[in-house]
Structure formats: structure tokens, C-alpha cells
Image 1 (spheres, rainbow over the protein chains, first blue to last red):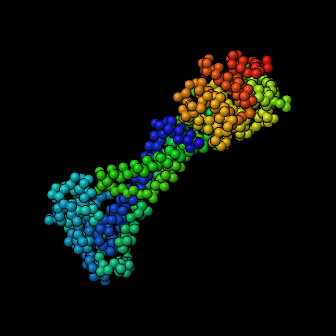
Image 2: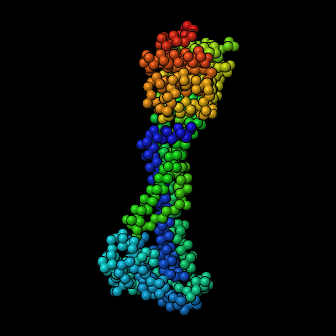
Image 3: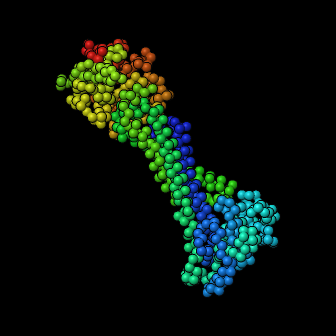
Length: 364
Length: 226
């Protein structure tokens, strides 16, 4: 009976109920979208790192494992790596930031092809000259670029030689020498990739290199990709925390306002319940159930909306952002939305529960 | 206290503080109502009849004096005890019907049973009451789809669904036309005569009061004829 009263109360005021559900839905979507973006972008970075086909990843001393710092090291080090036991191939690249979190990567395409098996082209093909660029399909879709077009980057024009499948090391690839010279890194590399004779030897090679090159960042590919987590990206956890905090505040305020006005509007109905012998706990129970139902439906809507934001991200800015659906966060977002809503219901609920029945019945 | 009295009121006083002024709504009211009696309390606005109604119904505490219902002094009850008493001992009928607008007539009756922690199923006696009230065919309508007379009959059904000792009716015909008023008053009298329901009705209308067995007159917070 109580649930029927709760549902009928919510149905009786469809506009307010809908607005409350939408607001809670937006709150949940905010949380899930931020989490989905962080997961998606890190996973995309992982996928591209694996796409290099290397077994060992080396970054220069003083550099962060995940970061945009160029911190170059001499490309002569590749010869050193090639002489190491079990190292079959050694290659390197230069990364240069081009705004936001995007980079352009300079690559020796022949070496990379030997290491990773080459790029798969959707349009066009490899570089034919020093001023050519290969873009991945997401960048091409977001920026309307096709093979044969000319595009502007680093204050100069580039001819697009090919559009490749996404997931191979970088979104934008230019010839290694060109990018080294353009960015004042002639003869320098941002990172080196080692392909081993047998992946089983990875731990041995990593240990050996760490022993010899003490200040370098040397990782197996598994270790390197495992670093792509929110905990290892400076400020990301704090950012997610801030968004969640804001979401809770939004949910709290919406439910508070909604229920506060609902309690005022339903003063007489609360008086009726009290005249029938309803205790303060009974009245509070009605309001808390209404709140919980709003939070549950709002959460479901928020999850659905997250599919909408994912579609928008992947359709309009697939190169800049990648959003995952993270079902593991659904119960967390639901719990946060519920707590925010129940906090918002606390004062209106207390006010309703303690209303004087005579005053409530006299309310017009 | 008369041993046959279901309600016994002794020297009942109620003083409200309005701004800096004390308003004495009840100034030492005393009366007794027998089990199965249909009593009308008549008086002009401000005579204190509604205040007495609220105290007997356990909606508000008295300032002093005593109100015994079934021998229990509700003037000394806590809020929680008065809330419990409202579930089982008294049923209310109000001038404005006071049905929950979101629920059907049937659910308005059912929620009273739910609050009183009674089973959902209605007992045979109550089904007879529904027949008497003539609302069986309107139970699945919401209040907005019902006439004032129908709403008041649903309110009466809700008031008696838990078989309360006392039915308290506050101007039950105040919002009704003459014909509906007569129907409702006839129903109240039938409930009293056929089922022995004790009824205390507040009204300012002498014609409505004439349906009762006994009429108590109030003025300026006191009973003047009873």
C-alpha cells in the first residue's frame, strides 16, 4: 500500500517528478561520463602502446611514464640496445605536443613496420616524402581529412599520404627526421621500443637493462600499459573526485528543492495521514521511498544518457576523446546519487514528519 | 466518571498564545458521552467546539483537565500514544472530506487499514457498511471524479474501516448541498442505529444537529446546554 501511495504521489505531479529524475540522471551521467572518458582515454593509450608491437619500452631519465614531455635521449642508444642479448629489433620515436593532450609522433616507418607488422591503411599509404603525414581514422573523421588532402600542423602544411586504422602507436605520424629537425631534437628520441627474440625473455632483458641504465624508465609492455590508470595520471583522481562532489551537490539541491516544495504543497495530505494515525516515521518513510524511487529511476536514466554522451563523443570528437561504458561504476554512481538524494530529502522529510496535524489539515 | 461513558471530559481547558495575547478556547468543559450515543455539539464560530473535537480526537493536547476514552486519559498521553490512539479508537470525518487526491476511493480506505496495521482484506461487517454507504460502485474512482456527497461517504467509510470506538465528524455537511447533506446525515444516523457506532458531530447547523440523539450547545469555550 505504501509503495502504491509513493508511486501515485509521483505520478500525480508529473512535471516535478520528471524534472527530478532528469536532474538525478544528469548527475549520474556527469559521473559516468567523466569516469568513462578517463577509462576510455587511458585504454585507448594502452591499445596504441600495444600497437607498437614492442616487448620493452624505454623512456629517458627524468621523464614520466605517462606524459607529454619530450625529454629526449640520443638515438645512438638504439645501437646500444641492438647489441643487447635477446634484442631482435630496436626502434624509436619522437612525440611532440600539438595542443591539449594530443601529440604528433615522428617515426621511422620502415623500422616500425618490421617491429609492428606495419600500418593498415584505409585510404592512401605510407610517406612518399618528408612533408607527408599519416593520420588515423578517428582523426580523419573528426577533422574531415582524407588521403591526398593538405592539412596544417606545427605551422606548416602537410600532405596526408594515408589514413590508417586506429590503435597503432599514435594518431598522427610524420617522418622521424622531419619531426626531429622541426622540434630541435635532431638525433634525439622521446622513447625507444625493443622487440625481443622471444617475449619469454622480457623480464630478463628488462632486469639487465635496468642494471645497466639505472636512470632510464624501462618497462615490459605489460608493465608499461598497466601504468595507464587514473592513479598514475597526475590530478585525474582529484578531477574525478571534484566532478563526483559537484554531482552530489547537484543531486542534493535538486531533491532538496523538489521535496521541500512537495512537502509544502502536500501539507494537507500529510495532515490527513496524521489524522489517520500515521506516525512521524510513517510520513518520513513515504518521502524517503519517493526519494529512493526518484534516485533509482534517475540513475537508470543517467546510465542510458551515458550511452548518448558516448555516442556524441565517438561521433563528433573521436580523435580528441574516447569514452568507455564502465558498468563497474554503475552501482557506485547509483549509491552516490541515492546518498545525495536522501541527504536532500532529510530536512523536508523531518519537517513533514513533525508537522502539527491540525495546522496541516487547516492548510489551504 | 460514569462507568457507561465512552468519553468523559472533565474541566477541559485549552489556551492558545496568539502573539502576546492568551486566547482561552476552552474554559472548563465537562461532558460525558455514552457508548452508542449520537451527540451533536452546536455552537457559533469561536465557541470552542472544534478545539474540543481536536482534543478528543487526540490531534492536540489540552492545557489542563482530562479526557477519558475507554477509561484512558488522553490528556496525559504523549504524542506517540495519541498517534496510536488515532489509529484504532477514533475515526474522523471532516468538512472538506480530506481524501488523499492521489489515491482511489478504495485505496483511501485501504491506507487507513495499512496505517492501523490491519490486514488488507475487509471484514464482513465493513462490506455491509459499504453497502449502506452506497459507494461500492465508485471505489475505483479518484476523489476528483466524485461528487462532494460521494467523497464524504468515502470519508465516512474510511473513518469506520478500523471499527473505531468513536466517530468524530466535524461539520460533515458544511460543503454539501441540501440533498447530499440529508443523505450523509441519514447515513450517520444509520451507522449509529444499525451498528451502534458512537458519533460525536460538530456543527453550527441546527437542522444537522437534529439528526443526533442529544445536542450539546457551546458558547465562549463552555457548554451552556447539554
